Structures are given as C-alpha cells and as structure tokens.
Length: 189
Length: 211
Image (cartoon, rainbow over all chains, first blue to last red):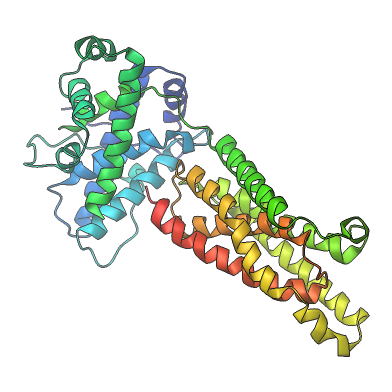
C-alpha cells in the first residue's frame, strides 16, 4: 500500500493537470480527482478526529467535495496554484458536514498539506449520502449515472444502449450531477 | 457508491464550464436594460433633463451611483470564487460615501441654513424610496441567477453586494427623473432606498447562493 506524498504549500503540480483537464484531457482529470480525493479524505479525517466527530461517513464528505470541485471548476482563476482553491472548497464542505453532525465548537481546519493523503477505507459504509440522493434523480438520469459510475461504461456505449445521441447523454449526465449536488444540499440542510 | 465510481462520472462529464465574468456582465447588462425599459415606459426622465445635465448637483447623482455600482459589481465577480480575497477592492466601496459626504459639506457651505430642511426633504422622497427598490428588481434577479454558477463562501454577504450593485444601477436610472438634486436629499434618501435592496439581496443570497 503506497502512501501518497503530502502536498506542499508551494506545490502547484495540480494546476497544470487542471489546465489539461479543462482543455479536455479526461485521463488527466480522472487522475487529478483521485489525487484530490485522497488529500481531502486526509483533511476531513484530521478535522473530524480533532472535533471528536465520528468518521464513519467521511466518504460522504469526500464525495460531496469532489462533486462541488467538479461543478464549480470554472471558479478556479487558472493561476499558478490549484491547491488554495481546493482547500477553500474542501474546508467549506467539511465545516458544513461537521455542523450537520452537531459539532458545536469549530476549530480551524488545517490545509491538507499538513496531512498525509489517505486511501479510501476498505469497508463500504451501509448507506451513503450519495445513494440516498441518487434516489431523487429522474430514472433516466439515475440509469446514466449508474452505468457510467458503477459499470464504467463510456458515453458512447450508454448512448447506444439507451438509443440516445451522445450529446443527449452528455447533457443528461451533466444535469444529473447538478441535481445530485442540489439534492445533497437540501437533504442535508 | 464508492468514491472511485463517482469519479468515473465526474471525469466523463465534459460539458464546457461556465464563463463567470461573461455571465455576470451579461446579467448586469440585461437587468439594467430591463429596468431602463420599465422606467422609460412608466416615467421617463424629467422634462428639463438637458438643462439639468449641465448642473453639477444633477451630474453628481450619476457619478455617485456609478461609484457605488462599479466596485460592488466587481466585488460580486470576485466573491464568486471560493478562494477570493476581496482586498483593496473592498476599500473602493468607501468612495461613493466619501464623495457624498464631501458634496454634503459643500452644500451646507453654499446654501443658507434656513433652506437645509427643504432641500433635505425635497419633493420626491417617497418616489425615491419606492422607485429605486422597484428598479432594482430586474438587475438583482439577474445578478443572483448568474451568481448561482459561483461558489461564494459567504452567500448572504455576496447577495448583499449584488443588492448594492443593483441599487446603484437603479439609482442611476431613477436619478434622471428625480427633481431633487441637492446632496442633502441624495445623502438622506438614496442610501435608505439602497438599504432595502441590500437586505433583499442578503436574503436572496442566503437562499439561492448556497452550494
């Protein structure tokens, strides 16, 4: 089991990857999201343990943060650093999550550069936020997200199976992700 | 669903991201155009507009409204980013108030004290208090809708700033109709009308700018 190196404060190795991702490099984007996921997981775990909030559902926060990072990626200014922007979004989502779990006193959250990146825990929790909010999607949208997420299908294969155009599948997927974020927000507020 | 599964969907979603600056600028332009159309249809500029435009007091109303609208719109744009630092731009918000304060002092020096009361009350304060909020509705709505694409860390504050920008736009339109030009009038009633819009913006921000 490899431990990812910590992300240093002056580290802008993410910024060029994000630029490539925004220009359409899907493989780079996937790698970046996975790396960010590990960093956010470590950050959330640190924050939850300092606040003595159980970390059984830490993966919910990681997923909500990744979804926000994806849907709000146009709010990154495209500068030399991506990490401060990721930190700001992650901190916002982690604080939200801790508030929901009834943490009364909020301590400052360390940036993830302080923590070692953490791999996803092996034991899948019983019923995650994302499964609950998936139920709120329209059936067609849920079908598309499931096919692409769980079955790892491509847009093209999904389009062929559902007799839709690829463009329509892309739009449906995008709308589904936006609905997921909205449902998450209203379900947990 | 595991996080790796979710990443599959996120990576596959290649719909072009929003261009924030363009969207915000467009919203401001459309909102202002809608309010201007409403204003021209219902009220229009005052009859002596051309003569008034040659007086300092009249022109100052527009300068002041612009000095309010421009920095607040820029701040809105900046605060849509989660890692935003408002910085020196926030200080620019002092400009319209400093300008107004200076104008008030000048007016107090130029105008005999027994006229201060009439100048302050003017004739149109009720118009001012109702029309500025009314003319703010379109720009505020457009701004809030556009800003939903953003990720502001302080939704209520960001919404309030959108209210300031919208009130600035509305004040610019309304000022061409208002017969009261004295800085004493402007300093009393315009900020009061602006506050109403700011409160609406803060409420809208808290409700619609969460993400």
